[in-house]
Amino acid sequence: MTGNSGNGGAHSLLIRIKVALVPGPHNRRVEAVEVDTSMSTVSSQPKSEVNDEARVRVWDPLVRLCHWALAAAFFIAYFTEDGPLTLHVWAGYTAGVLVATRIVWGFVGTRHARFTDFLYGPREVWRYLFDLLIFRAKRYLGHSPAGGAMVLALLLGVAATVWSGLELYAVEENAGPLASSSAVPISTPRVTYGFAVFADEDNKESKAKNEEHESNDGGIWEEIHESLANFVLILVIVHIAGVLLASVVHRENLTRSMLTGYKRRE
Image (cartoon, rainbow, N blue to C red; front, side, top):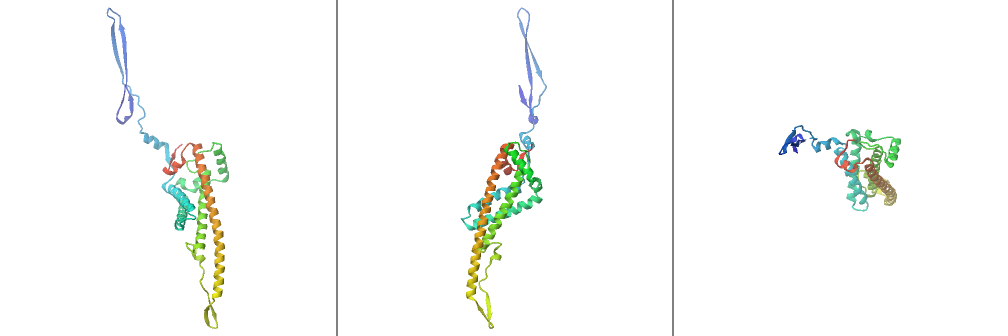
């Protein structure tokens, strides 16, 4: 027989019944009842409290916001390269702001958000990668050495992609924060014998040279911008593969931890 006692958990109550035969003409049966009043207590701790003790908060809200928002901004910009220019440009602006925010937060943020917590030397990075491939890698509560190196590579890669996009936007559209350096003068006055005249022929020649120069610059920046974007895409693919492999090796869902902010304590 068992029973519950309020919030104190589950207790056990033992009842033993003894039956004996008494010698005699009628062989009477004698029954005795023994009650064991000792209570054995089962764990009374709520399940939610046990779960809270088994996990710890690692990623703060700003880290998670920058992570997922930057991923969204990059893919929007990447797949709108030949699409709506306004959407492409604003996705690039957003990516740039997120990168800058994450870099600042890497110096002044919470413990596991700081660069000092997850930036390791090349030897530690390669050692971790080798151990990861043979399923013997050490588990880190924050970013692993390889994960930290990937964070740095992605931040620098996206920053370079955004910068090259701004240069291209300035050259081709004469717009954006870098557009002032690409402004082309319409005409240049020339003074002859005290009279101001506009040298139309010189202006046309100068304008043609400027257009040719801009065209060459635009082609160069376009190649740089596309190459950097493709390089970042490769980094993203490698990053996803690494997260999946580390999740298997360490037996934890690293993607979910970046959504909730929590990882298991041990």
